[in-house]
Image 1 (tube, rainbow, N blue to C red):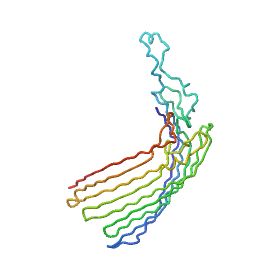
Image 2 (image 1 turned 90 degrees about the vertical axis):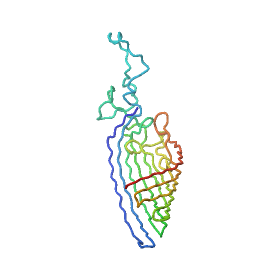
Image 3 (image 1 turned 45 degrees about the horizontal axis):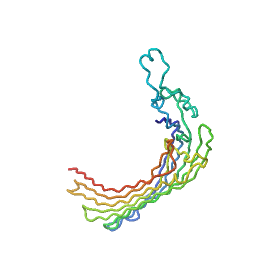
Image 4 (image 1 turned 135 degrees about the horizontal axis):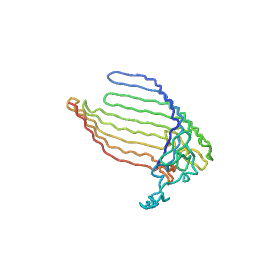
Length: 277
């Protein structure tokens, strides 16, 4: 079961870049793109992993018989709001199902939180071609500052964190002829674990706040393949082999992210075809 309320979700996003054409002739092409990405977000989210209409009834209670129902018996499967006595009421929102209110929880079984995050990410991209050989590369480093507040003012301490994440990639292309090309690419990236609505919540409710590992989920990809453009470019065929590895957060018994990340490893082969007469 799951109950979620996004009270506020505000974001401002801007990407500014400068492009330079350093060479452009029959023998060489060199293009450089430099810039910076800026993003500010303010997310106030309240949720409860175990408040769902289905969870407002106890299916272990016997169903009243017809006679009991006619007699107005007191047997009921309805769970009272007392089951959520240790949770907080979400203000300004209507109740959920048969319950008299919507409930949320910061920590333990929810991503409830009021977070503000400022991200600045300078980047550079290189696009070159020398005869039949092309080379593409890019690099980006993100600087992110986060402030977190428990909107219910409970015992979870307000906290903040400053982090850096990097992403880079490189690709090599060889054009065999006008109809055939081969390529190899490598991509590495670090990603952050986000909560409801893209906000940030501490991964350690024991008082240690944000954990560095939650901002350095490493993901990388190796891929190589061939591309064919046939029948006067009416038929396109692409093939690729790849190896990908990325992090996936484990979820604890309470539904809260446990702070442990499993490594997912995938090997595969792809083939695609597209014909446009």
